[in-house]
Amino acid sequence: MLSYFLESEFDGKKRIELLRKLYSDDSSNNIYLLFAGRASQEAGDIKEAFESFRLSAMHNPRNSKALFELANMYSASNQLDVAEMLLEIVHEEENEDSEVLLTLGNLDFAKRNYSKALKLYKRALHNQPWNFSLLNHIAECYRQTGNYEKALHYFKKSLCLNSKQSDVLLRMAEICRQTDQLDRALKYYDLATELDELSKESLMGHI
Image 1 (tube, rainbow, N blue to C red):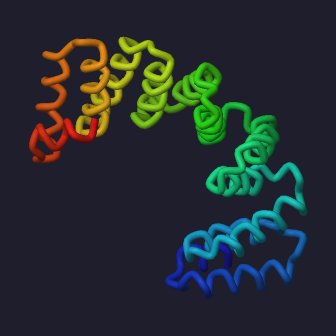
Image 2: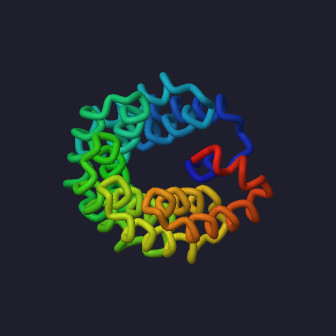
């Protein structure tokens, strides 16, 4: 039955109601709460989603999936310390889970702990070497710490995986302009204009 409604054409509200009913019929199986929380998120009901994840975690304090969802919600509301505490618990259970490492890295980046964030991003990258977004995160850590050549190196690796990133080209142009490499900066501006079909003047105005 679970697989049926997960792939059914029920709208969000009906799915949530069914999941809640399944949970009330079998309160020992808190996977229903986890799915109810995700369905509530999809429906835009953040309060209901939070309550479902909280109840799921209360039933099993080592429920890494529910804790991970709660951590993301705390992080989104800028309660970084609580999010980090929850993620550390998840990290104990899912030591090399890329999503956990990425989220922990994002929290450290938000706190400007760039060296720690960099280590977490690189561990996540080991599991997902194709993840161009992770490469961008690594590049930003190097950029924020003034290691511009390493930043450019990782931005280039990201572009090799996804060449349609005008924002990355702009960041590369900014680095080159800051380091007086004007010819390289203009090259990256030109590539960005080709992607976005904007004038070079308008792009430079965003830097």
